[in-house]
Image 1 (cartoon, rainbow, N blue to C red):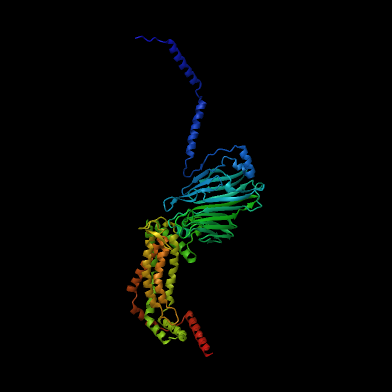
Image 2 (image 1 turned 45 degrees about the horizontal axis):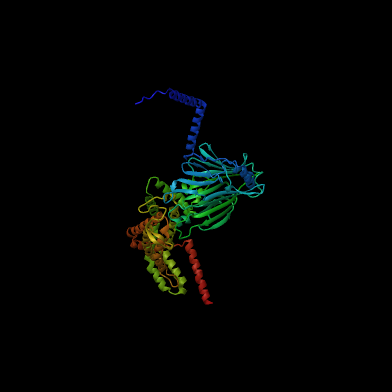
Length: 631
């Protein structure tokens, strides 16, 4: 085998190549300054990545590239005039600025400077999705600007420049529509740490020579309300434009409508349990309101419930705009709304007028709040409230039963009067005798009616309270998944007009309880009624019809209503039946009642003013009747 010879030339060549490469690496080695610069650049890239991640109580501003196309700028100048400057800035893209606090998350769009999202953190829809009051362009805010160079511009189509700053613990988002670096229209939003109320200012700077303020400058706010609850038609019934006028809440109604309102404090796009409210610091001088309805009776699915729009003029001074407002995006929680002192936002919740609203505000809401503080089951809270109410009202039930017992005792005497004066011509005399017997026996027909009338305010107050109480929303009890919605136990394969496509159990139980309660009440009232007189309607026959009609109406009407309300009626009527049975068996003794009536007859009788007046009127009527017969 031939031995390989050592090749010195190749070795020298490898050494030269290695030396050359070493020299090249050394010559291209970065300096210390360049290494430091690369490190800073890497840190900036990492920081930029972190800034883009949404965080609570922080702002996110998407980065954009500036527009440098001179031809595009010329075109913008021809189209927008002075405001072409805003369209040439880096912010002239569909980008968003997002901020959040503990209860709400807001996202502002550069285009239009208004919200493109408002999410309530503590609430979910009936199917578990986040509650958005604003999302996917369902809302807009616009000001029509007439410029001095004869252009008509809509701010919703123009691009604003966002800036996020701090004012103490509050976050401030400034959206500026710029005509130059020193001329702009600004939307300023200030968000507190744990609050649904947002301070909102519209102001301009240096636009007196740009905007023709001799023409009215109107703010136009639109919103389409998303459905959030299970009972679509019921939610739609409680969705409407509300506004506060002279201290009173007014409603635009359930259907499509429009109205012009002079001088209001706030205007609310109210849904069943949530609202978007615009409040004017100095009040609105005029409101043009429009409302569209997208839900018919048989609608099963819909993207929106109603469409709302309000237009209002902005105040202008010295050619500049400067208006202070506030937005409320949040729940219709009475306690939260009432916490904003001086705004009367709690009036946005319709708790009933007069005494009904008074009972809800100062009795039922505080009691409900107190009980919910230490009782976890809201169904038990409803039952406990019902027990307390029925016990408080039980003296009225007793008084009504006592009046019934007295009428039952004197009924034979009244029957004799009817037999003595059977003809129509004796009607006046018959009535006089009837009143005499009642007066001598100490019995009054009104004593039976008054207890029932006194119970009516409680009935109607709770009818308003339970469906409006957001504390019941998505709270379950027994088979009911949500006490603020219907408690469906069976899905029908078809739709029954006015009833629906499901069967709710609590309304069935309430209807059964109402039937037996009315049956007992009619037996009691039959004792209180005087014998049927000739020519007069037979009230007993009418009450028999009501015995079947009222439970049926309850069954149909409440099938789509809040199950909490049906639970209240069921328990209330059940308790009333028990109280009536107890009074009848243990407290009412007809022999004692008869003895009391006999003792009362022996006492000297003195007519009160009302009885005396009625007696005089009847005597005058009888004399006129006799006089007319003589003629």
